[in-house]
Amino acid sequence: MARNRKKTGKRKKQGNYSLKPVLTAAVCMIIFKILLIPVTTWKGFGYLLLPFSLYLVWFALWQAVIPGIVSGKAGVKLRMGKVSALQRMAVQWLLLSVAAGGVAAFLLSKVTTEIMAVSGNSLVRLGLSVLPLTAWVMAPLGVLRGLISGTGYGRMTAVSLVSEQLLAGGIGILVARLLFQSGEKASLVYGNPDYPAAFAAKGSMLGMGAGALVSLCFMVVFYRSSWKDTRRRALRNRMKNKKQ
Image (cartoon, rainbow, N blue to C red; front, top):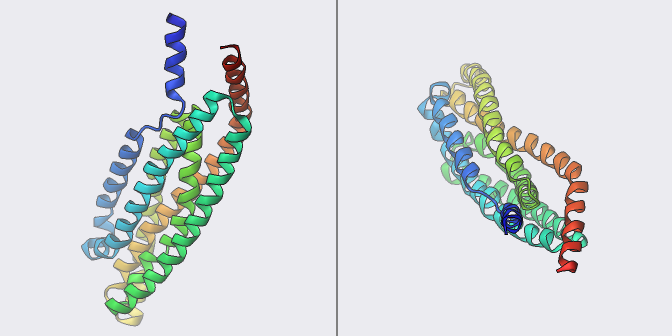
């Protein structure tokens, strides 16, 4: 009985995508944006508000909802020992995420143009211009997190979520400060006092994109390196299922 309970406990970890790291990452993200206010000024925060709000919506979809779905499906296939089905599912979801990210990137670029035209402020595009590529990167990143969590490496997913936001926040503050200084020089040349704030908003969003890109590279490397162990556990589960 004790052995069966232990086995059941281990199985529950497979395909279980925890939302606690997602919420922790979101809190870190918001804290860093608040810490940016002395750098960007409140005017810069205003330029950051729209791209950051769109980022949060995309983050909720591709780092919480989609990974949870993928994790559950991957966990089922792993427990049933369906190695080929797990591989096919991974490829299908990754291709779907790349396509969805591409469509989102295209639509966001169009939305940026429309917002610029409606507002009559060309500086609005600076913060929004980074968002399409970031959204594209976040889609396959979310699927990889779901696959990795679903195959029993939920802790690694949690670490990557929080470390991504710490990295993004640090880079964002640094780049925002540098671009704010560049904006001050540009404002002297072109006579527009909004340049420093708009440039700093772009710097903050560049930090988010950099964090997502680094996380994607790490997740790809980890998924490839952990596949042999995942395959071995799936085959072992298949043998156990046959004996039962």
